[in-house]
Image (cartoon, rainbow, N blue to C red; front, side, top):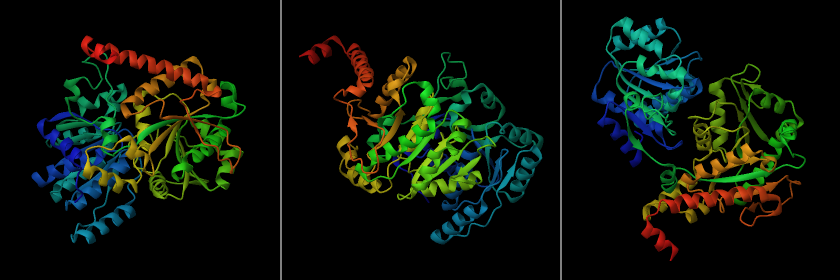
Length: 512
């Protein structure tokens, strides 16, 4: 059975104190393991037929949740039934069978094969419930927020008791009006909300997660800086990229494919110092960005250089694309995970609101938003690249044997000391874009981000042999005056806010 980390155990234990509540943990620290452990603990305590529901905002995320929960329960020697409730296809049973066979062999147990259900209609849900009830086995539904209401319709039709436990993954989505009603529809004995970014509203009785009647109390919260200090996330570093010939927003739109390819090359150049292979996640402005890039010469050039290009969107014009192949969503995720773990593979991934949340790919070295992301979307996207390098984990474990935290000096010795946030062509930014960069830097302060240490700039690469070092933005080079002014102003305001919070005595002591 997989052993939880101490902080995960604390998170799971916190849910035993209340039938409803919020668990807030940064992206990539193992929220799914906590949820799987909660289900496993309840099944072991109350054997026999019970219904559990795991909700997610997206079909792609529900596939991953099933795979991880399925694996966790197998290793816990738990036999259960599983079913999707959404409009997607069924699970990749070949992959799940490989997991089952491996777990049986490694643990000398005999968990039998169980077909994974998939349905979008109430009749299919009723059939799954009746089958599990006849077999006296626990049943776990993996549903999207859009489809979860149908589970309640089936439950009422069969006149069975409430769902035992509802676990809402990426629960900040429930603040949206189109999802919020599920809080009052799906009846459960216990209900919990897992997120990395709690969203509050001005009114405590509104849809925000500060509505305790709807969401309960915050039962457990881990801050990003704590996750970094215990080695579960890497520090952020901003990388400002400039491309020649791009001076205004019109140039930006007309040359976006060039900017994407050039940015990838500049990112690769920055990573040479730590011998990392670039694996870049790009949040596009929409489907057209992807289509334009696919049909550009820059796409072809990157492919000729051995870059694996993954592109995914809900649009039929894009779907799930790996290089020139159209694949299933599950195959897309499986191959992306494999290439993410392969240190020899160069990867560029483009998406529009598909891969921001909950996708288990550990190899990303940086992210590049091509549009302004709201706070929760940005932090979720950053979390995709903030996972430590696999080979660094033993080093981290050794350091934590001798002290309680990982310092900045410790991180500098790692294979992956930073996760890069790439901002293209900041020098032609509008006033709104400058304001956005300021707010972005301010938000990153909670991630142990230090502007004068953690911002670098590069310009368009001149060729494969260009060995010029990236510039750290602490000297105010000519080309970076605008960025330097942004940071100087921000530093001034942050310092003013800090001093304003000091008592008179503390302030006088500082002055001395």
